[in-house]
Image (cartoon, rainbow, N blue to C red; front, side, top):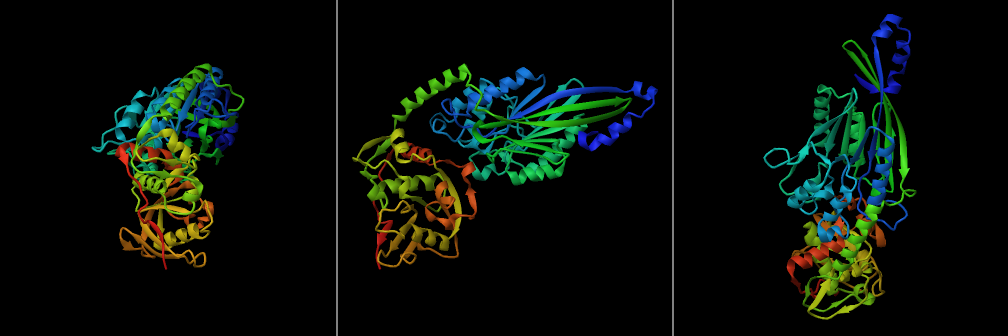
Length: 505
């Protein structure tokens, strides 16, 4: 039987009153081990105050140097999204991780962002035990290189570990033919199997949101839950189950220092355990030299890659402030077309204030990665909202409310033809909206690609707040990378002002 030390304290006290003969027949051993968790790590961050691959590795090396039994777990999200990942599809991330590879790696939804083939290739290059009990090939077989569980033996103590990837991955990323079973049911069945195989303690390493984490806690089938996905530093202990999640980008890691007491009396075996938490701020840790050198090489490569053309823009572009904040623009059409294409949405809307380079481009211009990043410098990601037609009209009213002033909220759009009356009162300016050639239906549901800033209500787009987000920011890709991919795949693009946003009565 396995139980939390606090729940068995009275039993331990009672044990002291046993007769001397019985006491001598008993064998009592104390085993110490440490669970270390880091997740949602995207930034190389050598020059930052804290965080990054190097500081995560420095913590892991320190913990392993000072503790005999350590399981360093990584519950996913790392090969995307980042600027360099948009160029090398996360290859550099694997090299960085392999300098101090996690003992256990569970993929997060961002591991699938570049498709099934890249996922398999990247995971095959990672020097970690790969776990994902709820992931299968299309034919139901286990994905090559992966296992459902693994068992660690620290002396007489058996610690079983289950891996669970995000069970909604198929809707928020691009896993191809891979199949994903419900996480809770998978946890319950695999925990039971590990107990049957003699596991004294069960650990689940899971990429799941806090709501699902709480469901896992409430099942009580695992003793420890190490999670990723929410980007939040969080620890919890309800007396039976201990939960830990580190802060994103390794700003903070969490170590669980566990003391297990094993009492063996004939065929009876009792395991009690107690945990102390260590929340580890990575700021005091120096970036190891091997990471400094590798990151320096990657940053030099990145600088060269930014000046590489991704395609040709056959038509002139104008990203000057007055242009993008007061009217339809070719560059706004290019960006929103790319966003809509990236998430397969009905329509798209972004704010003109997010287009920043303030320059003109001649026709037949070889546009580079650096150009696109200069136009979209804020690191916004492309999300996908479900909106009613009435919500869409309200969003357009908000974006047009300050016209003719050059407002950052001014809408650049795709998939819509909008007529507005600039002389009408703000809030009543939209005359008509067509989506796919048909008049918008206020009661119908439309999917919209937009950026995470607007989805949070930025620039007074309050009508987006609380709406169903099919690809929330935590699972989304960089807008800039979406535009790069769109131009690269088309080779030559010819955006123009085509009457998406016109004035009328």
